[in-house]
Length: 269
Length: 256
Image 1 (cartoon, rainbow over the protein chains, first blue to last red):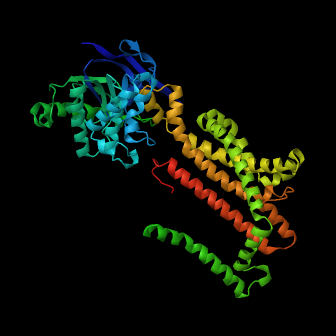
Image 2 (tube, chains in turn brown, yellow; image 1 turned 180 degrees about the vertical axis):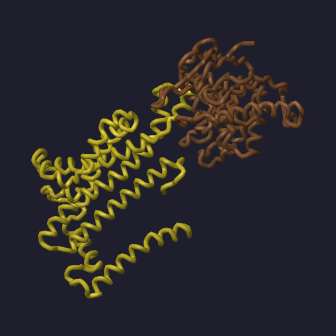
Image 3 (cartoon, rainbow over the protein chains, first blue to last red; image 1 turned 135 degrees about the vertical axis):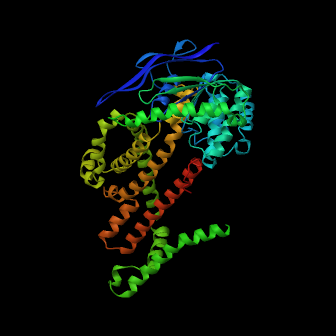
């Protein structure tokens, strides 16, 4: 298996007025080509910080975050990021949002091909009827689909998703998960997904990294025994329920540990 | 014009009719000496007299040109300065007290100094209007720019944008709304400062007209001057709002 991303003894800490705050501590794991990794842990534990280091927004205090064998120096189009807050550009129409990355020098997309790529992802994400609408007219689920379409359009081989479906209602969320599985089936990408939903992690991922309450350390790495393509029926399987109760137990333990911690400063992830 | 448009127009007209009726009512009530309040129709007659015989249009043009130039120059400088202050926190810490100090000074208090340093010509009036527009615009700009979220910049970076592309394709579109707001605020302040700027030996202009009329106690001329200033400011603001609505169709609140 080809290693795409590596966390090698990664720690990250901040200096605060009340002393050092360790956010991530001695984390090591690899993400191989074609993996779908879900990172799960109590909220505020430092999951997003892990992703943010691989995306190139933060640098580890010690250790190395490698992408394709080289330390991550900054953000780049080969690592697509789907943000929790979507970040669709409100001043651009749906189609212009998707085209945004295609017009950048770094991606070398000839002008003649842009239209076809936009149309492809508009169709794939069910946004064709809204091509010329501004994001203010879109629902939360549609904005999320637009953010995904925009990230996909520049063809990153690696996708980083930070609780992408966290703000959606249950129905939309489950539709989005199925859409993501379908798209991954056709486009084959490596994914790192940050989530706090145990069901989502099992349903989507091939491997689940459970992290501890802050500072985030690796608690357990679990291989998910289901093959792709998957559909919702796997959620009825006894292995699914077993895995769910196991992971839930791990996460709940950490949640309790977090509550017990006397927190000197309140930090979001 | 459709039914809804007609109703909106009527609704907007209503307070004006109310104001004119109130004006007549005060005049006829006998509480105030009638010679101190010219009737609306007298003011209207004076307006046409000034328009046809005294060259009111020249005054309107002189004032509008001063306001336009003052605001244009003020905003031209306020946009880059406000942007830098909003973008770089240390710059803000550095310049904020200074800007608030100068902003708090009423332009009218500066007139004697402006006369000393810039004389009594067109330049002096322009300096006053520039001063007023710059300081009101720069505050709006940097307050707005400092609230731009870094999220969109991060998104652009992950899509592969370089520094120049981020500036051109993300920061400029996010700055446009603040430039337009700064322009609107500066226009309002500039019209309010106009009369003061025309205190400096102006031959023509609505402020000068009001000044001169007050010397001879020509109340109707004063009323015409005030109403003209208000109307032109209103029209300029309306035009700017139309432009804003056109440029910012993407915004959640349509200002149209």
